[in-house]
Length: 70
Image 1 (cartoon, rainbow, N blue to C red):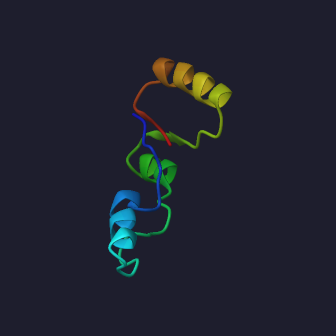
Image 2: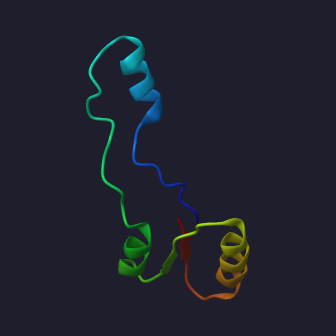
């Protein structure tokens, strides 16, 4: 399983700005998705680059249980 991590609702923010409204309710703190995966009995990994993605994807396919790539 993979999660694309974003800490903002960017499209809503753009609409707020284009209508000259204040930026409200669209920014939030980062979720530690690997910690959430671990809490549910899986493995979670932060992916920072393409080589990490390749290596962790291959490892996930050979691992029992689930792996979350963030």
